[in-house]
Image (cartoon, rainbow, N blue to C red):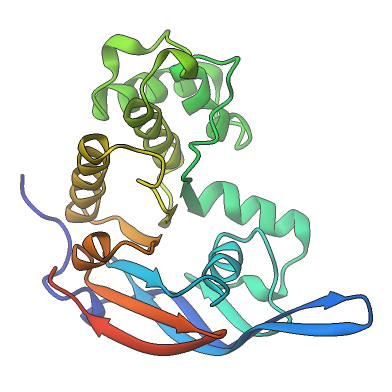
Length: 241
């Protein structure tokens, strides 16, 4: 397979730019700061891990990157869009068009088969029915499930369900893919297969940001951003270059 990503992704264009990012929550009359002035860029074709202990702000940062939540201060540029200034409807539109999600718990719809689960992301972007179906079948085949397209999630193994989730994440050709502990619910063999698939997507040029506590996953990425108490403790260059 020929890689389409740059030799050094940080020499390319920043697809995510975060400047002085803050996020606080109100607990009654008390303000609880969770993110405290983050500055970091993620680049086109890069594979980055976000690490840190429980309570460090990883999930909050991922929610903001995924346009599921808004910062209380600072800016977040996704491509050329300052998404920190957008309202909920605009965030929903950006989320559907430009971000693919892979969750630890798969988040598949139990009543739908594989193809229908993959189609859901395209349905909300008003992709015509025939085009949706053809693209969904192609993506199912791409993740090695072309012979299971009529199966429902409960008829699949955990690894197969995560393959469906990856296909769904690719449905709208997103600018970035966000993965939240993507192997957390899988056995070691299935987890290894999913990591190989994510590696391959990155080798094909996809920008991937993964939240993990697993040093093995971290070692597969270009860089790791380590959070501690809502701040960036350090950024490291890892084994994958």
